[in-house]
Amino acid sequence: MTERARFARLALRQARARILLALALVGIVPLATLVLLERAASDRMATSLGIAAALALAVMAAIAWFADQKLVRPIGRLMRHLAEDRPSDYADAQPRWMLQVDKRMGEATDRLTSDRIALGDALALQKQLTREVHHRVKNNLQIVASLLNLHRRGAVSDDAAAAFRTIQNRVDALTSVHRHLVSSGDGADRVSARQLAEDISGIFGDTDGLCERPPVFATIPAALTLAQDIALPIAFLLTELIELALRHDADAIVQIAITGASDGNMVLTVGSAVFAKPDCNAALTEGYLARVLAGLSRQLRTELVRSDDRTGFTLVFAGDN
Image (cartoon, rainbow, N blue to C red; front, side):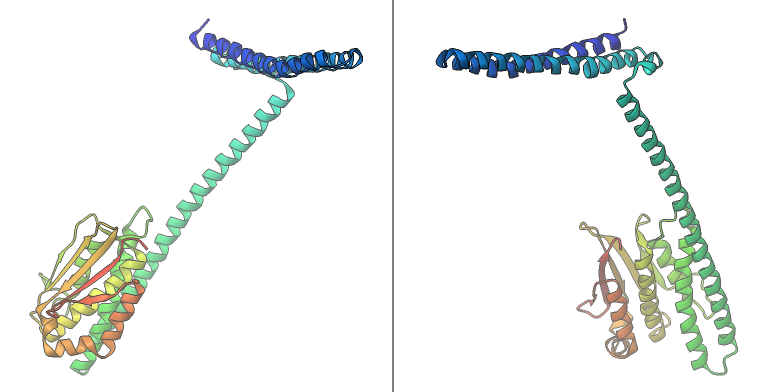
């Protein structure tokens, strides 16, 4: 006899002993009560009580026999055969209710497995479709950016060329977000914060975007990522501030930093000495740019705070959205 078989036999004996002990304890109470009542009652009442006690004991004995034969022994035989790695030996002797339970559990397991496989297939299809949508959006935005570039080259005035360039910068920023969403193979819809900042800074250089060293320096940990709903307004906000600095000083230097806070939030800081100049400061406090920056901050459910020396901005936003 194997160790598992001996353990199963011992467990069965203990279960049977506990059942019998419980029934015995239950029977002692009414029996003792009947004995006390018999002493205090008449002979006729004592006879009736004795008959009732006998019937109660008989019923308890029948219940004990039924529980032992129909519940304890079948489960014990199943435990022994399972312990001996011979479940097939017991298959034909299983009670009907146990076969039904086994059948229902098997059906439930099969349904759960099928649902899990179907859910996995649906999730994979959703990721594939999402990447396809981002890919098509990226391609369409690149076409729009190319058309804007052609119109900018053919503009009859510097103001028209600057207007086309401004629109092209926003389209390029949006294209950058979708390009990173396409490249994320896990379908998590997250963008590397450092790569996004580098792409936004790469938009600004010479008039054709071919500057070897963009006038933007980013200090961002490589592990920080942004959700899609956060990456889009962050990209537009960086584009607005960088373009503003370069519009008022072609040699301006813009510094960007994104750090993670202990409470799970992220902190974005954008700084440049140009922001403190009077004409640049006026653009930041009045006109359409102030409304754009306020709208982007509201989209991130936060507020863009300007430093006391007017040279920098700080934005605290949720790490996940």
